[in-house]
Length: 143
Image (cartoon, rainbow, N blue to C red):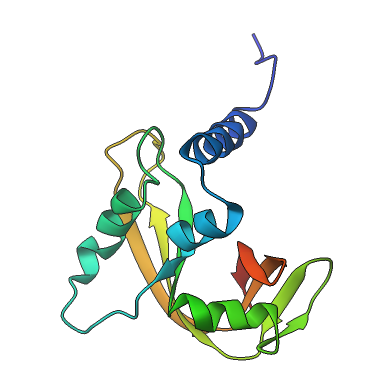
């Protein structure tokens, strides 16, 4: 018998939105929690970085977030993309003029139930983010 009703991914998105609202986070605060991280130092254990960050930032509580990108810079530099540090893409999206150090965490295996284990990919790229009232509120992608 075929599944009838909302798509399971839609339910996960709704759950994540509800958790953010229940937590009282603004969209900017959620962006910071999910995507802004201090620059990495050479002494950090690469194998555990994503596992620790995803756990600490609350993205493995009920379900394991499949993928997440951390921008390794301070929030002021990232916020500049919403102003002079970026160029319009479409709608409220802006492309960064500068490159940022990025760490992308991808869930290992197919299960999205904790415990969650991640692999990491690092790069230095331009980013595309959504801005509202001069603040970043959504990480779209690296470009």
